Image (cartoon, rainbow, N blue to C red; front, side, top):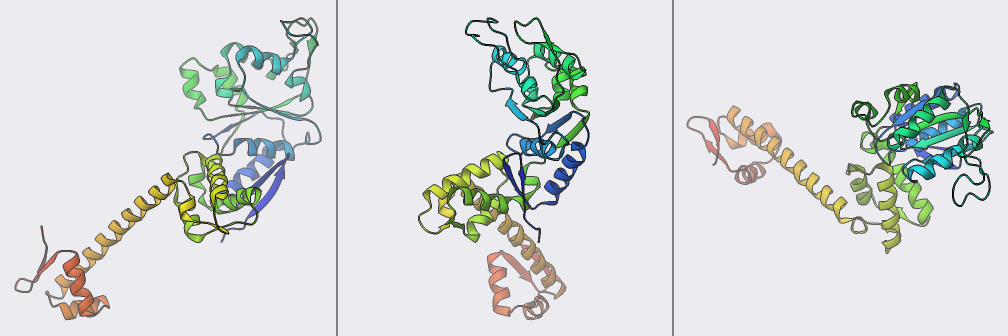
Length: 324
């Protein structure tokens, strides 16, 4: 049985039990001792920010600033001013000078999430900063020099983006001195139960999850990953009537997926049993009493199985045929 671990990385509580997550966080700790730029890849909602925070937590910069921004959250013109800052009068509404995120993260870590959507024009400026060049604030005349550890993340295939001309190949290679892949939740099912209980504690600490509901959570493929699991558990906690989250409290798509899985499993098991009975009857020359003894079941049970599976026993030729 895997042990549940709880860790705190820059105001984020991390809960996990899978060997895959344990290995990933060990890699993050190893990378943290260097100043190499790190590109974190993985599906949306899989936990890329968790890894970025772990890197900062274990680095020599952990006592300095942690700054993060989602590159898709702002339009291009605002993203540039947020990252690099601006001087008074640089544009309409710029009544006071403002430091950019690179300055705010000086001697600390700047995390740029969804870097795959970074505008091509800004990519040139970012590349120059990574190469150690100072930069101007918008509307500025004085260059700014910073010492900032850059960590980026994306759910896109940046190699494909480079081939399509949407992302600079030189910037990609500069950002990915070290690459860490966050596996989707379906590849680390051991994390589902501890994460579900963790989210439930945050929402309603008086609730538990019934074994039947937990089984459905553990069997679901979670296309939305950890974010989707959190939303499902939160919603179920809101509507749960008793002291436990029951199957009926879960979204219909989860219950339907579980029902489909159960039908598939029953079909596979049924076919295996039918094949086994057919083979043993063949070996017993169609003699049901002998076949039942070989199978370790009663003759009456065997007869019910023969009828249920539509088997026809021909003792004359000792062959078992499947009824059409």
